[in-house]
Structures are given as C-alpha cells and as structure tokens.
Image (cartoon, rainbow, N blue to C red; front, side, top):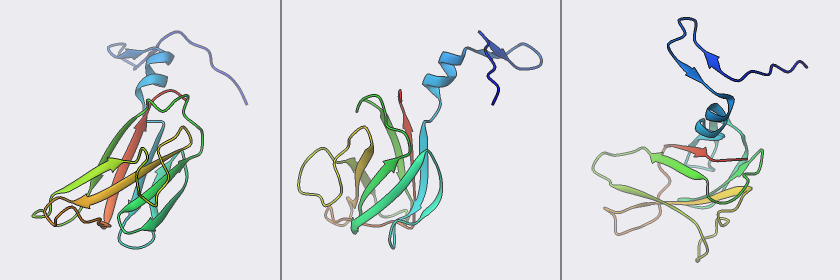
Length: 133
C-alpha cells in the first residue's frame, strides 16, 4: 500500500481546499442505517461492527474502531408516522438493557413522546458518529 502525504487537498479549480486534519476531524467516523422493527438489522453502515437489540427500542451499536474518548458527537434520526413524535436518548447508566455509551459502543433508546414515553422500534433509523479515534 502506498502513502500519499500532503499539506492541503484542493479541488481541480483550486477554489475549495482542506487540510488532512480538517478532513480527519470533520467527517463521520462511523454511521449506520438500521431497521428497528425487528432485530435491528443493519441496512447500511460504515465503521460499525454490529448492532444488538435486547428489547424494543433499545440498541447497542458497536464500532469497528474505538473512539479516543466518550466525547464523540452522535446525530440520530428515526422514521415513522409523522403524528408520532420520537425522542432518541444515549444511554449513560440507568435501567436499559442496552449497553452504556463507551469508546467502543453506543447505547441508544428510541421512544415515542406521543405515546406516553413508551419504547418503539421505528422501521428505519440513522445514526452518525463524529470525533477522534
């Protein structure tokens, strides 16, 4: 394998440029699209080794490469009926069956705020992770 070492990367016109550090710090390190209505089947992913679904609406997403610390940023969305408002919470302790958020995995709960806060497994869900690895 060859290594290309540069200080700046530009497009052909030279109007857009980035340093390798900007690219490293700004791109998603991992992402996943998964089905929440059954077993948490992975529909597409990058940087993810697995997902588990111990209970409805509870998920543990495991990364292929560990993050440097637990200060990574998570951006998530859940699909479904527009009348149902959903909330997504990372797990940091508590009574969930999914694992806590660590450098190697992220625990998530998806629940409906319009159904009294009950856990839900929406059909399609997406999550992206940003931070140093």
